[in-house]
Image 1 (tube, rainbow, N blue to C red):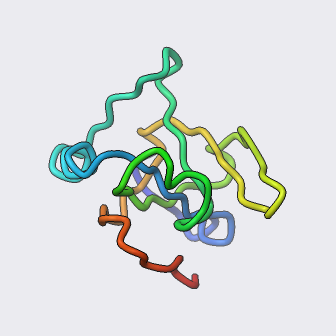
Image 2 (image 1 turned 90 degrees about the vertical axis):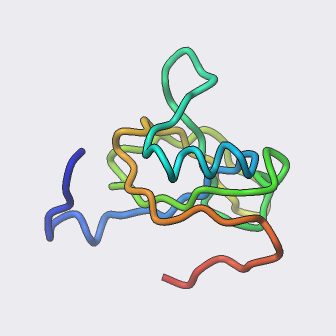
Image 3 (image 1 turned 180 degrees about the vertical axis):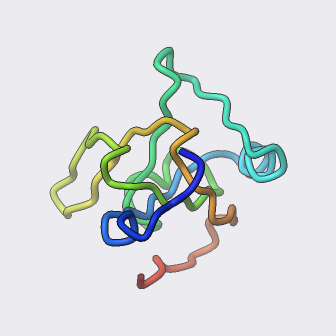
Length: 105
């Protein structure tokens, strides 16, 4: 996906892909992802402070059209994990997981 249209804005989802600080920096610097999955998909959580923090101490914040994500797991507290193709993601930023709270948007 190369650009968002006005019709997309109401159907976006913000996700957080947890990884190592080095991998997060590489994703930001190169705008490419290396997936460990044979499908080429990567995973993201809808929460910055949930179960996904176990996958790394840094995260890459992305937005995607909801049509481009597939629900992979849902936890009792409501947290959801999704899988998506990196080419569909718009990278917002990468930050260390240092107790920041989830953006309210």
